[in-house]
Length: 86
Image (cartoon, rainbow, N blue to C red; front, side):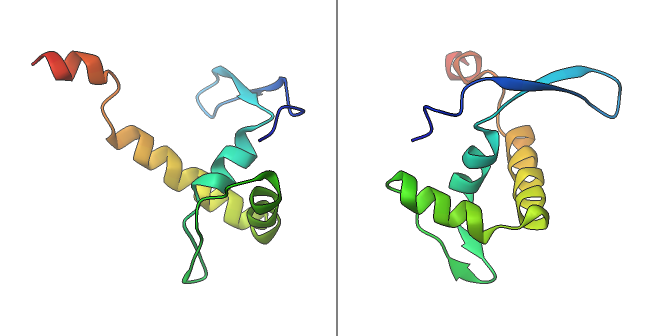
């Protein structure tokens, strides 16, 4: 849905590591949001719906959604194929 958002920015993490963040990342985070202010949000089916969710989130909402997505990523297995073997 976001082919025109190519490229990345390089940022420093709090521990001093350089990380490349895709220009698409804010939209990926917005697509992962399933509730805003107790209102359920369906997964976007097109760019217009994705932009509407993105616009509904302010900077604070986008930061909160990004933090929650990060916590979910930490809880999931890193190497699913390795776990599947066991």
